[in-house]
Image (cartoon, rainbow, N blue to C red; front, side):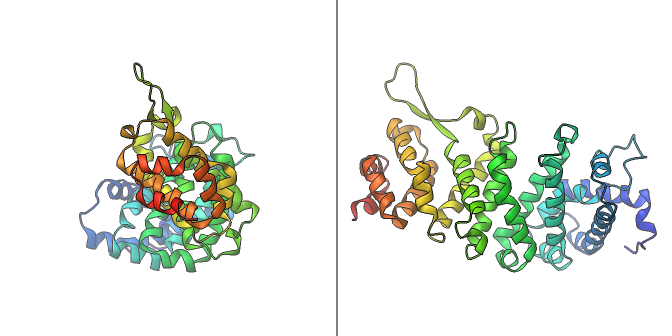
Length: 350
Protein backbone atom coordinates (compact mmCIF):
# COMPACT_ATOMS: atom_id res chain seq x y z
CA UNK A 1 0.00 0.00 0.00
CA UNK A 2 1.02 3.57 -0.73
CA UNK A 3 0.78 5.38 2.59
CA UNK A 4 2.77 8.60 2.77
CA UNK A 5 4.50 9.81 5.95
CA UNK A 6 1.71 12.32 6.68
CA UNK A 7 -0.97 9.60 6.39
CA UNK A 8 0.92 7.23 8.71
CA UNK A 9 -0.03 9.47 11.64
CA UNK A 10 -3.75 8.93 11.04
CA UNK A 11 -5.63 6.75 13.54
CA UNK A 12 -7.41 5.04 10.62
CA UNK A 13 -4.09 3.60 9.38
CA UNK A 14 -3.23 2.42 12.88
CA UNK A 15 -6.68 0.83 13.26
CA UNK A 16 -6.19 -0.99 9.94
CA UNK A 17 -2.77 -2.28 11.05
CA UNK A 18 -4.32 -3.38 14.33
CA UNK A 19 -7.02 -5.41 12.55
CA UNK A 20 -4.43 -6.86 10.18
CA UNK A 21 -2.21 -7.80 13.13
CA UNK A 22 -5.09 -9.62 14.81
CA UNK A 23 -5.88 -11.46 11.57
CA UNK A 24 -2.24 -12.48 11.02
CA UNK A 25 -2.11 -13.84 14.59
CA UNK A 26 -5.04 -16.17 13.89
CA UNK A 27 -4.65 -16.96 10.19
CA UNK A 28 -1.43 -18.82 9.57
CA UNK A 29 -1.73 -19.91 5.94
CA UNK A 30 -4.17 -17.80 3.87
CA UNK A 31 -3.29 -15.14 1.29
CA UNK A 32 0.45 -15.65 1.67
CA UNK A 33 1.31 -13.75 -1.52
CA UNK A 34 -0.67 -10.69 -0.39
CA UNK A 35 0.78 -10.92 3.12
CA UNK A 36 4.32 -10.97 1.69
CA UNK A 37 3.53 -7.88 -0.38
CA UNK A 38 2.34 -6.08 2.76
CA UNK A 39 5.29 -7.01 4.98
CA UNK A 40 7.73 -4.27 3.83
CA UNK A 41 5.09 -1.61 4.58
CA UNK A 42 4.29 -3.14 8.00
CA UNK A 43 7.96 -3.22 9.02
CA UNK A 44 8.50 0.38 7.88
CA UNK A 45 5.29 1.54 9.58
CA UNK A 46 6.17 -0.15 12.89
CA UNK A 47 9.71 1.24 12.65
CA UNK A 48 8.46 4.80 12.05
CA UNK A 49 6.17 4.73 15.09
CA UNK A 50 8.85 3.11 17.23
CA UNK A 51 11.47 5.70 16.28
CA UNK A 52 9.07 8.57 16.93
CA UNK A 53 8.30 7.16 20.38
CA UNK A 54 12.04 6.79 21.01
CA UNK A 55 12.67 10.39 19.99
CA UNK A 56 9.98 11.55 22.38
CA UNK A 57 11.80 9.37 24.92
CA UNK A 58 8.98 9.62 27.43
CA UNK A 59 8.82 6.21 29.11
CA UNK A 60 5.76 7.10 31.19
CA UNK A 61 3.86 8.04 28.03
CA UNK A 62 4.94 4.78 26.42
CA UNK A 63 3.50 2.88 29.39
CA UNK A 64 0.22 4.75 28.98
CA UNK A 65 0.20 3.95 25.26
CA UNK A 66 0.56 0.23 25.91
CA UNK A 67 -3.06 0.00 27.03
CA UNK A 68 -4.61 0.42 23.59
CA UNK A 69 -8.36 0.34 24.00
CA UNK A 70 -11.06 1.26 21.47
CA UNK A 71 -12.94 3.05 24.27
CA UNK A 72 -10.07 5.45 24.96
CA UNK A 73 -9.15 7.06 21.62
CA UNK A 74 -7.13 9.88 23.21
CA UNK A 75 -4.03 8.45 24.91
CA UNK A 76 -4.02 5.30 22.78
CA UNK A 77 -2.56 7.26 19.88
CA UNK A 78 0.20 7.19 18.67
CA UNK A 79 0.20 3.50 19.46
CA UNK A 80 2.56 0.60 19.82
CA UNK A 81 2.10 -0.93 16.37
CA UNK A 82 4.90 -3.42 16.83
CA UNK A 83 3.19 -5.14 19.75
CA UNK A 84 0.11 -5.72 17.59
CA UNK A 85 2.22 -7.34 14.86
CA UNK A 86 4.33 -9.63 17.08
CA UNK A 87 2.01 -12.70 17.14
CA UNK A 88 1.66 -12.67 13.34
CA UNK A 89 5.40 -12.21 12.82
CA UNK A 90 5.97 -15.13 15.18
CA UNK A 91 4.10 -17.39 12.71
CA UNK A 92 5.74 -15.81 9.67
CA UNK A 93 9.35 -16.24 10.87
CA UNK A 94 8.86 -20.01 10.63
CA UNK A 95 8.27 -19.74 6.86
CA UNK A 96 11.14 -19.19 4.42
CA UNK A 97 9.55 -16.56 2.15
CA UNK A 98 8.07 -14.20 4.76
CA UNK A 99 11.12 -14.63 7.01
CA UNK A 100 13.49 -13.53 4.22
CA UNK A 101 11.38 -10.41 3.63
CA UNK A 102 11.31 -9.59 7.36
CA UNK A 103 15.10 -10.00 7.57
CA UNK A 104 15.69 -7.94 4.41
CA UNK A 105 13.49 -5.11 5.76
CA UNK A 106 15.43 -5.02 9.05
CA UNK A 107 12.73 -6.48 11.30
CA UNK A 108 15.18 -8.49 13.52
CA UNK A 109 17.19 -5.37 14.39
CA UNK A 110 13.97 -3.45 15.12
CA UNK A 111 12.70 -6.32 17.30
CA UNK A 112 15.96 -6.39 19.27
CA UNK A 113 15.69 -2.65 19.97
CA UNK A 114 12.03 -3.02 20.88
CA UNK A 115 12.76 -5.96 23.21
CA UNK A 116 15.49 -3.98 25.00
CA UNK A 117 13.20 -0.95 25.34
CA UNK A 118 10.29 -3.03 26.68
CA UNK A 119 12.66 -4.88 29.00
CA UNK A 120 13.66 -1.51 30.44
CA UNK A 121 10.03 -0.98 31.50
CA UNK A 122 10.14 -4.14 33.65
CA UNK A 123 13.54 -3.48 35.21
CA UNK A 124 14.19 -2.32 38.79
CA UNK A 125 13.41 1.36 39.22
CA UNK A 126 10.17 1.20 37.24
CA UNK A 127 6.81 0.55 38.87
CA UNK A 128 5.92 -2.79 37.28
CA UNK A 129 2.54 -2.87 39.08
CA UNK A 130 1.14 -0.34 36.57
CA UNK A 131 2.33 -2.31 33.56
CA UNK A 132 -0.34 -4.18 31.63
CA UNK A 133 0.13 -7.94 31.10
CA UNK A 134 0.69 -7.13 27.42
CA UNK A 135 4.29 -6.07 28.20
CA UNK A 136 5.19 -9.48 29.61
CA UNK A 137 3.31 -11.26 26.80
CA UNK A 138 5.06 -9.06 24.23
CA UNK A 139 8.47 -9.95 25.68
CA UNK A 140 7.60 -13.66 25.53
CA UNK A 141 6.42 -13.34 21.92
CA UNK A 142 9.66 -11.53 21.01
CA UNK A 143 11.56 -14.45 22.54
CA UNK A 144 9.55 -16.89 20.40
CA UNK A 145 10.41 -14.90 17.26
CA UNK A 146 14.10 -14.88 18.22
CA UNK A 147 13.94 -18.65 18.91
CA UNK A 148 12.54 -19.14 15.40
CA UNK A 149 15.42 -17.08 13.97
CA UNK A 150 18.04 -18.98 15.99
CA UNK A 151 16.78 -22.24 14.50
CA UNK A 152 16.09 -21.07 10.93
CA UNK A 153 18.66 -18.29 10.39
CA UNK A 154 21.67 -18.98 12.66
CA UNK A 155 23.98 -16.98 10.37
CA UNK A 156 21.94 -13.84 11.09
CA UNK A 157 22.45 -14.27 14.86
CA UNK A 158 26.21 -14.53 14.35
CA UNK A 159 26.62 -11.53 12.05
CA UNK A 160 24.07 -8.96 13.27
CA UNK A 161 25.47 -6.88 16.14
CA UNK A 162 22.01 -6.32 17.62
CA UNK A 163 22.00 -9.96 18.78
CA UNK A 164 25.21 -9.39 20.74
CA UNK A 165 23.40 -6.60 22.63
CA UNK A 166 20.42 -8.90 23.11
CA UNK A 167 22.66 -11.67 24.46
CA UNK A 168 24.23 -9.26 26.95
CA UNK A 169 20.79 -8.21 28.20
CA UNK A 170 19.64 -11.83 28.54
CA UNK A 171 22.79 -12.68 30.51
CA UNK A 172 22.50 -9.79 32.95
CA UNK A 173 18.72 -10.15 33.40
CA UNK A 174 18.21 -13.87 34.01
CA UNK A 175 19.80 -14.12 37.51
CA UNK A 176 17.23 -11.75 39.06
CA UNK A 177 14.38 -12.96 36.83
CA UNK A 178 14.57 -16.61 37.99
CA UNK A 179 14.13 -15.42 41.59
CA UNK A 180 10.94 -13.45 40.89
CA UNK A 181 7.63 -14.99 41.87
CA UNK A 182 5.14 -15.47 39.05
CA UNK A 183 7.58 -14.83 36.19
CA UNK A 184 8.72 -18.39 35.54
CA UNK A 185 7.40 -18.48 31.97
CA UNK A 186 9.31 -15.34 30.99
CA UNK A 187 12.41 -16.71 32.77
CA UNK A 188 12.04 -19.94 30.76
CA UNK A 189 11.92 -17.97 27.51
CA UNK A 190 14.95 -15.86 28.44
CA UNK A 191 16.96 -18.87 29.67
CA UNK A 192 16.24 -21.04 26.63
CA UNK A 193 16.81 -18.23 24.12
CA UNK A 194 20.07 -17.30 25.85
CA UNK A 195 21.30 -20.90 25.89
CA UNK A 196 20.53 -21.37 22.19
CA UNK A 197 22.21 -18.07 21.30
CA UNK A 198 25.23 -18.92 23.49
CA UNK A 199 25.78 -22.01 21.36
CA UNK A 200 26.00 -19.81 18.26
CA UNK A 201 28.01 -17.02 19.92
CA UNK A 202 30.34 -19.30 21.92
CA UNK A 203 33.50 -17.58 20.61
CA UNK A 204 32.30 -14.15 21.75
CA UNK A 205 34.49 -12.56 24.47
CA UNK A 206 31.35 -12.03 26.58
CA UNK A 207 30.94 -15.81 26.95
CA UNK A 208 34.48 -16.68 28.04
CA UNK A 209 33.73 -17.13 31.73
CA UNK A 210 32.98 -13.46 32.41
CA UNK A 211 30.98 -12.66 35.56
CA UNK A 212 27.87 -12.02 33.42
CA UNK A 213 28.20 -15.34 31.56
CA UNK A 214 28.77 -17.25 34.80
CA UNK A 215 25.76 -15.56 36.39
CA UNK A 216 23.61 -16.40 33.38
CA UNK A 217 24.55 -20.09 33.29
CA UNK A 218 24.12 -20.41 37.07
CA UNK A 219 20.60 -19.00 36.68
CA UNK A 220 19.90 -21.28 33.68
CA UNK A 221 20.98 -24.29 35.77
CA UNK A 222 18.58 -23.12 38.47
CA UNK A 223 15.70 -23.01 35.96
CA UNK A 224 16.55 -26.44 34.50
CA UNK A 225 17.33 -28.18 37.80
CA UNK A 226 14.30 -27.08 39.81
CA UNK A 227 11.65 -28.46 37.46
CA UNK A 228 11.33 -31.92 39.05
CA UNK A 229 11.35 -33.35 42.57
CA UNK A 230 11.01 -36.74 44.24
CA UNK A 231 7.47 -37.19 45.54
CA UNK A 232 6.53 -39.86 48.08
CA UNK A 233 3.65 -42.13 47.09
CA UNK A 234 1.28 -43.53 49.71
CA UNK A 235 1.68 -47.27 50.26
CA UNK A 236 5.04 -47.42 48.47
CA UNK A 237 8.55 -47.18 49.82
CA UNK A 238 9.78 -45.67 46.55
CA UNK A 239 9.19 -42.07 45.51
CA UNK A 240 8.26 -41.00 41.98
CA UNK A 241 9.62 -38.19 39.80
CA UNK A 242 7.11 -35.32 39.82
CA UNK A 243 6.90 -31.72 38.69
CA UNK A 244 7.79 -29.03 41.22
CA UNK A 245 4.76 -27.04 42.43
CA UNK A 246 5.89 -23.84 40.63
CA UNK A 247 6.27 -25.71 37.33
CA UNK A 248 3.22 -27.94 37.55
CA UNK A 249 0.53 -25.38 36.77
CA UNK A 250 2.28 -24.03 33.65
CA UNK A 251 4.10 -27.14 32.42
CA UNK A 252 1.96 -27.29 29.26
CA UNK A 253 3.43 -23.91 28.23
CA UNK A 254 6.83 -24.62 29.75
CA UNK A 255 7.82 -28.12 28.74
CA UNK A 256 8.91 -27.39 25.17
CA UNK A 257 11.15 -24.57 26.43
CA UNK A 258 12.55 -26.80 29.19
CA UNK A 259 13.49 -29.63 26.81
CA UNK A 260 14.94 -27.14 24.32
CA UNK A 261 16.89 -25.53 27.17
CA UNK A 262 18.30 -28.89 28.29
CA UNK A 263 19.36 -29.64 24.71
CA UNK A 264 20.93 -26.19 24.29
CA UNK A 265 22.82 -26.42 27.61
CA UNK A 266 24.13 -29.84 26.53
CA UNK A 267 25.35 -28.26 23.28
CA UNK A 268 27.13 -25.44 25.15
CA UNK A 269 29.23 -27.74 27.40
CA UNK A 270 31.85 -28.79 24.79
CA UNK A 271 32.02 -25.22 23.40
CA UNK A 272 32.70 -23.45 26.72
CA UNK A 273 35.54 -25.16 28.65
CA UNK A 274 34.72 -23.29 31.89
CA UNK A 275 31.09 -24.50 31.95
CA UNK A 276 31.59 -28.10 33.18
CA UNK A 277 33.61 -27.03 36.27
CA UNK A 278 30.97 -24.34 36.95
CA UNK A 279 28.18 -26.93 36.72
CA UNK A 280 30.12 -29.18 39.09
CA UNK A 281 30.46 -26.34 41.61
CA UNK A 282 26.70 -25.79 41.41
CA UNK A 283 26.32 -29.50 42.34
CA UNK A 284 23.75 -29.98 39.57
CA UNK A 285 25.20 -33.26 38.20
CA UNK A 286 25.50 -34.74 41.70
CA UNK A 287 21.98 -33.65 42.70
CA UNK A 288 20.55 -34.90 39.42
CA UNK A 289 22.01 -38.37 40.00
CA UNK A 290 20.81 -38.24 43.60
CA UNK A 291 17.28 -37.40 42.38
CA UNK A 292 17.29 -40.24 39.83
CA UNK A 293 18.61 -42.64 42.47
CA UNK A 294 15.80 -41.75 44.88
CA UNK A 295 12.83 -42.36 42.55
CA UNK A 296 11.40 -45.35 40.74
CA UNK A 297 12.90 -45.58 37.22
CA UNK A 298 9.41 -46.45 35.95
CA UNK A 299 8.23 -42.97 36.97
CA UNK A 300 10.74 -41.26 34.68
CA UNK A 301 9.53 -40.88 31.09
CA UNK A 302 11.93 -41.88 28.27
CA UNK A 303 12.23 -38.28 27.01
CA UNK A 304 13.25 -37.18 30.53
CA UNK A 305 15.85 -39.96 30.70
CA UNK A 306 17.22 -38.83 27.32
CA UNK A 307 17.38 -35.15 28.40
CA UNK A 308 19.12 -35.98 31.68
CA UNK A 309 21.54 -38.38 30.04
CA UNK A 310 22.44 -35.77 27.40
CA UNK A 311 23.57 -33.26 30.04
CA UNK A 312 25.33 -35.81 32.26
CA UNK A 313 27.26 -37.37 29.35
CA UNK A 314 28.54 -34.01 28.05
CA UNK A 315 29.60 -32.91 31.54
CA UNK A 316 31.35 -36.25 32.13
CA UNK A 317 33.14 -36.10 28.76
CA UNK A 318 34.23 -32.52 29.29
CA UNK A 319 35.78 -32.83 32.73
CA UNK A 320 37.59 -35.51 34.73
CA UNK A 321 36.45 -34.05 38.07
CA UNK A 322 32.84 -34.26 36.85
CA UNK A 323 33.34 -37.95 36.07
CA UNK A 324 34.83 -38.58 39.51
CA UNK A 325 32.00 -36.72 41.27
CA UNK A 326 29.40 -38.71 39.31
CA UNK A 327 31.06 -42.01 40.20
CA UNK A 328 31.02 -41.01 43.88
CA UNK A 329 27.29 -40.34 43.50
CA UNK A 330 26.68 -43.94 42.29
CA UNK A 331 26.57 -42.68 38.70
CA UNK A 332 27.40 -46.01 37.06
CA UNK A 333 24.74 -47.84 39.06
CA UNK A 334 22.12 -45.17 38.30
CA UNK A 335 23.07 -45.20 34.61
CA UNK A 336 22.59 -48.98 34.57
CA UNK A 337 19.14 -48.72 36.26
CA UNK A 338 17.99 -46.20 33.68
CA UNK A 339 19.66 -47.96 30.74
CA UNK A 340 21.78 -44.89 30.02
CA UNK A 341 24.34 -46.80 27.97
CA UNK A 342 26.29 -43.71 26.86
CA UNK A 343 26.66 -42.47 30.45
CA UNK A 344 27.60 -45.91 31.73
CA UNK A 345 30.26 -46.20 29.03
CA UNK A 346 31.60 -42.70 29.77
CA UNK A 347 31.86 -43.30 33.52
CA UNK A 348 33.61 -46.64 33.05
CA UNK A 349 36.51 -44.85 31.34
CA UNK A 350 39.34 -43.31 33.40
